[in-house]
Length: 97
Image 1 (cartoon, rainbow, N blue to C red):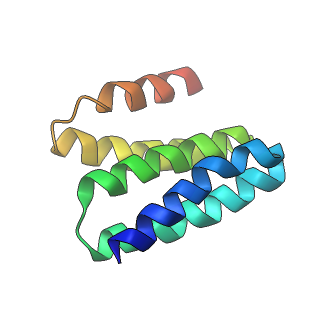
Image 2 (cartoon, rainbow, N blue to C red; image 1 turned 120 degrees about the horizontal axis):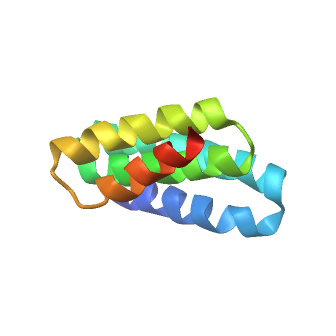
């Protein structure tokens, strides 16, 4: 099951190079599926990492509210894990203001 989540995440990361809005929608769908799998596995770091990428995809699609929500969820987890990636997500949120 972890392999499936990693595959979905990898597919989502390559999608933005295929055509902005359509690719962003495809990436968003893959990221959402991967997040569900990471939650089932209780893999908090990869859930947060994928939420970060989900926020990036929403941002590319100009859906700033959805980007903010995904990044806030990622930041909550990364702060709980005391992970250094929290600073990058925090910076993304500050740029939305």
